[in-house]
Amino acid sequence: MTEPGRARLPVKVIARARGNSIVGWANGRLRIRIAAAPEAGRANAALEAFLAESLGLGKRQVRVVSGFTAAQKLIEIEGLAQPELDARLRR
Image 1 (tube, one colour):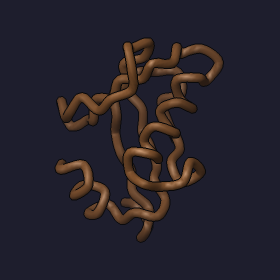
Image 2 (cartoon, one colour):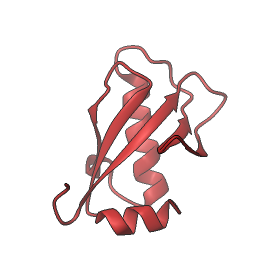
Image 3 (cartoon, helix red, strand yellow):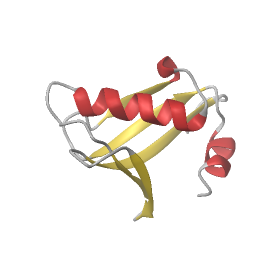
Image 4 (cartoon, one colour):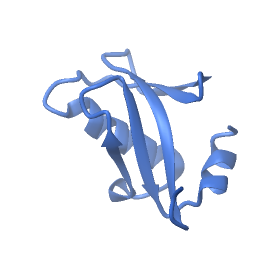
């Protein structure tokens, strides 16, 4: 369960893509393409920045909380309740 004003988002990241884009939902995870390589945390940082921009939030409001070295990650988003996040992403 998440706190009010805080949401969690399961994602699958495809790193080293041609560009950053949201692909869509598959198996309960949002698939996202990120251009950065998955080295030294670059893909995680790019993912956080891309999601923050896509959701109209500040960079510090979006962070990877698990799956740091895996393709499947859990993102925590501050400033949005779970229903609002789901509506914005049309889940």
